[in-house]
Image 1 (cartoon, rainbow, N blue to C red):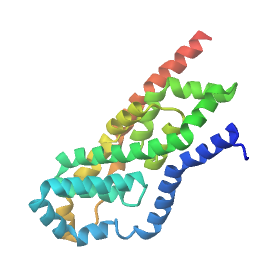
Image 2: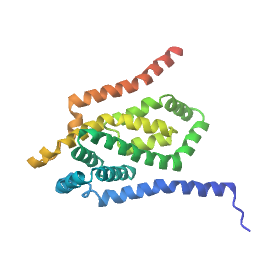
Image 3: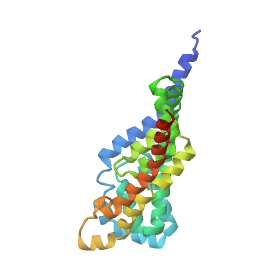
Image 4: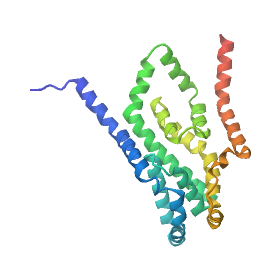
Length: 246
């Protein structure tokens, strides 16, 4: 009779926990090669009349379908998140389009977060807590500045959305903190791109493409950087107080 040790059981459970995260990564890789042209600005331009017609006749259905597709795009890190945000503005206006975009993006981010935390995050965070020396100091620093770090990675335009979803899961951030900071932190960027999407009718009429670099325009970038500085302020205050205490 073959005996199954506790270690073997833990190993099997560990591999089983990785299944959701591995499935997300597999779909993300597959989608990067197969959906790049489907979830694109050109595709939106070609199907815009059909989308508008469906929205006008089935508004609630259009909202639900749009949000479901957006959640899937974010959950599986598929190409087209920016196009989806533009579509939200194009179909539903800056408001409530921004609300639909932020809500769907938050739900999709939570899916990745839970998959990563269940597969790796809980064990990694526990090991960091049990460690000594520099590793434990880093974990303590993260724990003391969670809110600031969470808002920073959401507000900074250069941090990839997928990375901002994974990192908190790997360092033991709670679900409610992650969800709240995601919802609030992505509002500035979502408002910018949703408003661009709301003006796509004129862009389509001129046969042009939208300026997606608008978020780096000074009148938009500087306020966002100001919010980043505000988010980082508690960390700076703690660092100064820590030095004064030494």
